Each structure stands twice: as structure tokens, then as C-alpha cells.
Amino acid sequence: MINYFYETDFSLDNENTFSAWLQKVVDSEGKSTNEINYIFCDDDYLLQVNKEYLNHDYYTDIITFDTCVGNVLGADIFISVDRVRENAESLNVDFNNELLRVMVHGILHLCGYKDKSNDEAQVMRSKEDEKINMFHVEQ
Image (cartoon, rainbow, N blue to C red; front, side, top):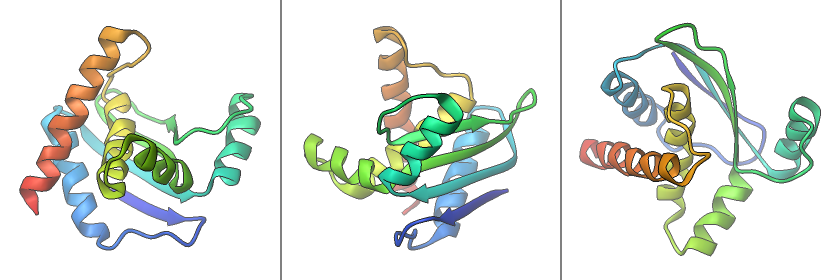
């Protein structure tokens, strides 16, 4: 089950479309879902989460709290809509596409993909693109 919560004035237009896409992403990686919660918030909210739970004092676009058990994915995924919007502007990409990238980024981490090294980041980016294309095909 994929749930959406909003701690800001942002909301997804069609949650069912996003859930169907994300479930296809999970299935394509040979995993299943338990409960994945997306919490959309602003910069200040996510900064507080970052400080309180990770002892990091900086803004970020996403924080994923992994509750996976084996191949069954579970998580609380916090996304700062402010960061996504700013990243989209600075990268000169569409906000909706950047939102898809961040949303699937969290799922890919749960599937075991890393992005610490350059090689890992390159694989992650390729996987993000592949999974975003799955969303656009569905539309």
C-alpha cells in the first residue's frame, strides 16, 4: 500500500496514477510492498526531521526511513516540495519530472541502489530515467 500525506499546501493531482506507477516500479525490481508513506512537506519541516533524526543541519529534497523486510518494501519517504521546485528551476527541468525523479529515487534506494560513488550515481540516474519513462508510457 502506498499512502500520501501533506504537511504543506501541495498535493498530487491523481494519487492513484502515482500509486499504480510506483507499484509497477517495485514489481519491475522483483520486490513487493508493505506500506510506503510519502510525506510531502516544506524545507523547514524536512530540515527539522533531518536535524532531529539524522543530526544533519542542512536542507535536502528527500529523506527515506527504510522499514523493509527482505524483498518487501516499506518506508516513510519525506519530500520537500520547496527543494524539488528549486532543483527543477536550477536544473532547468519541469517540476513534475523532477518530482517523479525524487519519488522514484526513494524507491530505488529501498530496492538496494546506492549513489555514494560516481559509478553508483550513474547507475541510479539511469534507473531513475528508466522508471520515469514507465510513468510517461502509462499516461
